[in-house]
Amino acid sequence: MAFDAGMTAAVAAELRARLTEAKVEKIHQPERDEIDIFFHKDRSTIKLMISAGANNPRINITEQQKENPLTAPMFCMMLRKHLQGAKLLTVIQPVFDRVLELCFEAYDDLGFICNKYLIVEIMGTYSNIIFCDSEKKVLNAVRIIDFSTSQKRQILPGMKYEFPPAQNKRNPVGETNEGFTALLASADPDMPAEKFIMSNYCGMASLTAREIIFRTAHRTDALVGECDPNKLIFNFMRMFDAVRNEDYAPSLVRSPEEDRPLEYAFFKITQYENAAILSEKNSISEVVDEFFTKRDRAERIRQRSSDILRLLTNAENRLNKKIAIQRSDLAECAGKEKLKRSGDLITANLHMLERGMKQVKLIDYYDETMPEVTLELDTRLSPAQNAQRFYKKYNKAKTAEVELTKQIKLAEEELSYIYTVFDSLTRAETQADLDEIRAELHESGYASRMKNYTAQKLKRPKPMEFLTEGGYRLLCGKNNSQNDYVTTKVAEKNDYWFHTKNTPGSHVVMQCEGMEEPSERDFTQAAMVAAYYSKAGKGASVAVDYTLAKHVKKPSGSKPGFVIYTTNWTAYVTPDEKIVDSMRVKTK
Image (cartoon, rainbow, N blue to C red; front, side):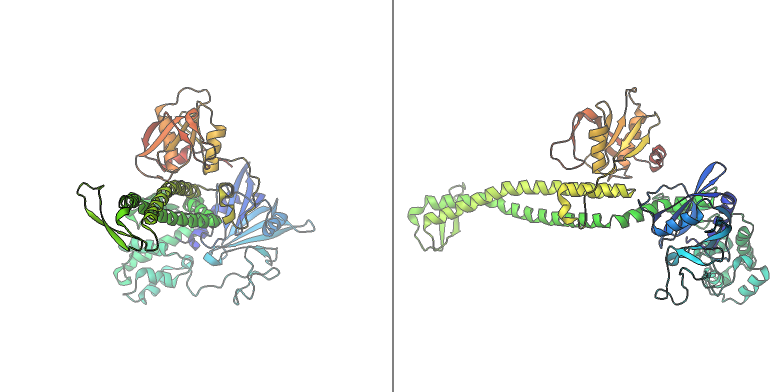
């Protein structure tokens, strides 16, 4: 569902309830189009996230943690200058549209109290965050819109702020029974009922219109003529009575197969029936946060890691092509014995041969049936030199077979390493994780393929942390550098080490620290973490090897993340995302 005017109204109501009279404590700008405002109220800190990103624009209270740039952008610096210590007076939705106006009590340059406004427009690719003074003049914005960008509406410092152009549609919140009845009476009976609502009323996502139709006709594709007018009017008015009365029922539906969010709304979503799992939440922000958290993180990492992905994809294609050619050449070497046999037959019959012969038919005495074979000769060479020519080809093929076997093994090992880095990208959560992967590739010999990369001093790796039910701490590497760190630097000899069998994945170390032998449940949970953070992912019955850390060794000169181990056991587990997530230690 799009973040429509109904969701915007619900968020405004929640912000008024939780943040009115709260003071601004900190302001961060982790992304170019995202602002985090930390409010202090009743001895607690509440984080408000405002995103104007084209893909996932929204505003909600959140507990997400993000890295911040070392140098704050200019827009963030301006907000800090004007709003640090300011008090939030109110949050209003001036019109029934995806626009919120946050009014702050702040101080001007002379120290006098005044109002300042932060206006949030949640409008897809046109989303924006605009900061205005007490007279609603624009001071700055996340997206400056000049005449070259838009001839209809500009957002420029010094200009008076104007609301987005109004749609030529009716306001559903202000609609009356009589008004809706008259509009319905004039509608085409063969028009889809959803289209009737969407084309006549503003600020509404298609999910909302479909829900009204479903509650009326028990299907979402009903025509106007197929809907009971009284029921349709009742369900329409009931939907927006909830907005007028601020009586919201935040809900979320998830895919039962993939356990991922499908839709969210400010009302109870019933139209999916048994095709999805309905979750009713306590707050609008909780719904929005759960829906966007993973999607937002994945999109952000995808954008920031495009250079790494391109490098890995090119390396994978190059290695696959190289291995295919080498295997083809190796297959040709399989006939080397035939070359030696040809040389032997010519040598044994030198007395019968003369210079200048194009071919010769000889008895193959290597074969029990003594067949006659035809050998092609070089007319420029003597019979003895032709024999030597076959011997040279044999020796060349023999040497090539040894070298190609060696080169194919090296290429396959490098390809396996590339797959481990691909796997690491799926677990990258922060810019620091991506920097570690870039540094790893640079040190592994890919420096020449990394444009404009300069080596930098990295902070100490921060692997993921988990806690089992028995209180055992688990460390899980997110990439090969972190895998080496937890295995070779952190793990003590009597700690337990876990890794998926014959599959790229994280190294997991269970720190025992002189505690009693872990229970079977602790081992299962540790194996589950190793299975979940591997290429096997959510597969059923994943094989996980585990052993004492003292049995794990890293060969000298081996690639990052590569180890060998002995004296291991194997556990078969089915990773459960909810269990793994509940075990994870959340770090700020």
